[in-house]
Image (cartoon, rainbow, N blue to C red; front, side, top):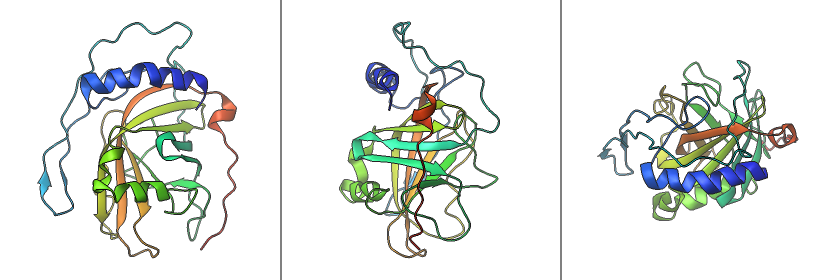
Length: 234
């Protein structure tokens, strides 16, 4: 993350999370609560909705650290995903035909999904391998991933924008069937869904991590466009 992104998150994210628990980005900067959604825990018990939150007023931001006011691009796609607390930093690419490659993350393409900044959820996945999303799987196996709640996730896009999210839910043992995309639904600002596998074959359950949008700022071009070097690991 560039220094401006660090400064914004260091100053705003703790205050936002303390005041509201879960927040979402509005046009330019923080300004809405996301609709509640129910889920299920590992035992199959219905969980209560996360709840809706309205962000309180925040103190003025230093004029040298301004939120992005760039017009959104209709062709925007995710280009990089970073979870600093877990040591994850991967280029994001469109999924090629065949077995998903290694050394990159991919965004899932489906009519129900979108890209950062839209009202449709974005779904990013990668193998549970070293240098990829293995830290997500490892962390999920300790107290059902409780330590990941509140962690920041950074997603950069092709139009040089930097979207910050915070993890709000960890869902383990999601069946690998035609219904695995039933969870992501449209909501203001769009949730982020991260996925990795819980086993080496396609029929093994999936791990899904849900993160809510917090804010968006401009990113420099080089930061938002890491060199992707996908490797065939099928």
